[in-house]
Image (cartoon, rainbow, N blue to C red; front, side, top):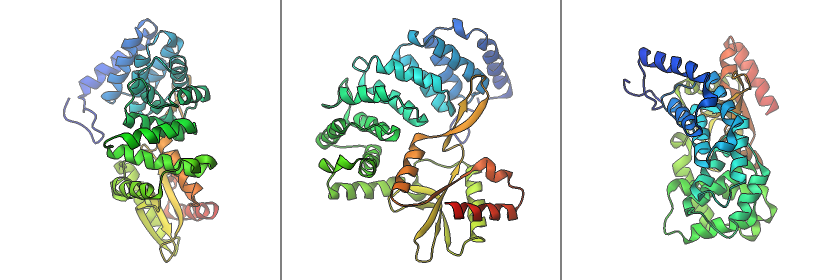
Length: 353
């Protein structure tokens, strides 16, 4: 190991990489004989060092799904966390995780329940029965050692997945109200919960946060999450694409073009096209490694990418507030052969947004 790369993963020597590649190939033949706990730890170790070969992870997922009833909840959650870390999605594995949680809602520690729902929310895999069971279980307040911060995080996964249980949300607000202090991330999640309930639930007015509290949350959110302080940092390849799109837009539109733009709601978008007077015409998002996860099919080959839940929630909220969103896949933009085709594509994109 020689230091770390830009993502914080260890840099491995060629000999080390060759060792792990050979080991993974050999292990793939024996996965059905490996204990569930060992499967989870192997997946976590491989994801941590950046060895995320898709066929191996797909084989590992199939072996785990075939024996999912033998997994303890914490083992299954560690396995799903490893896939998240690797930027990979295997839907049957997540469905198996949801089923395991659903049958043990009242026995699972609160922190593990929150982790399990976070894995589902990250990949937008919905289990309505699980959502109903969790909502009813926590309707009176946090249980299973769930802290107020974890309770808020769990509620955030609900709005990300489109689950709503008004009594549980009331209990979340009450738990946070009674908390002596809250971390910054919790305040940001609470603000997004408020926006989602306001946008999608007509009966939210019965227990809506007071306006002074909302304005305070918004100010905090703008400071912590907006513009250049956005919580998801873009890698260099996506940054380069964003710059190229912004430069091309300057030749297409008469208004101004800005990158890493902070919206009125406080959320950051990759590019904003504004009319004179700074009124936004359209927000453009670039889909790349920061916003997408690779979906594995049954043969282990990567199929279509899946947009991360937090990104989808942001886009839904912006659209619900009347903002127009256009999405440009990073790979598609790179495939355009010349500047003229890029400009023609952007003109059509702006017309259809």
